[in-house]
Length: 63
Image 1 (cartoon, one colour):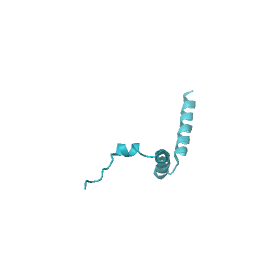
Image 2 (cartoon, helix red, strand yellow):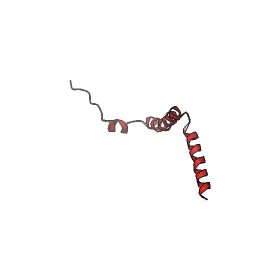
Image 3 (cartoon, helix red, strand yellow):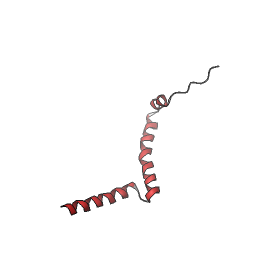
Image 4 (cartoon, helix red, strand yellow):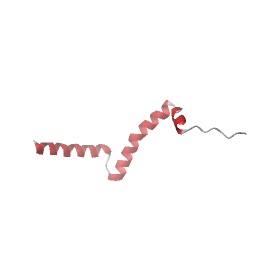
């Protein structure tokens, strides 16, 4: 009896269902939020808002 054929990662990825691909796409940003929260205690949105405020202050100083 021959060993089972194991598809390559590329083949396996191309055979994923649409639902699995959507789940992977959705999980990426969620993971980013979780990592940001665990590293700096802030959500990504909070960090972006702070960066936005800093950029506004720098722009106002220049003009």
